[in-house]
Length: 159
Image (cartoon, rainbow, N blue to C red; front, top):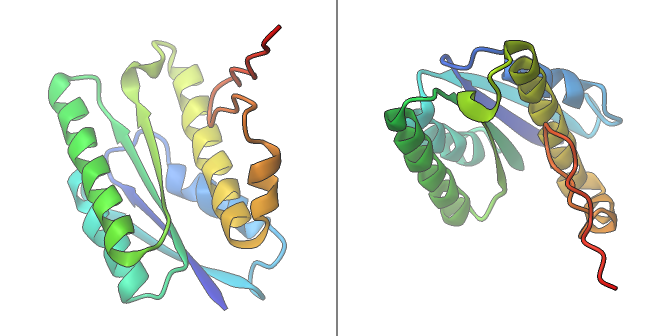
């Protein structure tokens, strides 16, 4: 049975880990084809090592790394450092880690920001499922300007 890992942080102002888990638990094969491994770490910079541990120790086939950055410049730096660690974990383990970051400055409206968090977590959970079980779903959507958590940009059309 495959294992899908979900790791989030304490700073996020929306429980995006729960959203990702709810989305995955609603997919075909939950409990028969795959099970979930869930962890929470203190902050952004702890995500990389936990992703690597989930792959190497817990045997996860894919991991979803979730975090929310504040709006201060230091928060942006921490998110960038966390992103680099997540990329390194992927390269060292040859395993996909889907980075699901939301930035507080994506919206000044708290309800809209909460919705972005929920949708981004759910859509990336769906993407993780597709990467493992239905990769053709991703291929069908290539070049469509699809976004995770906000309105799609749509494809560019040449005359």
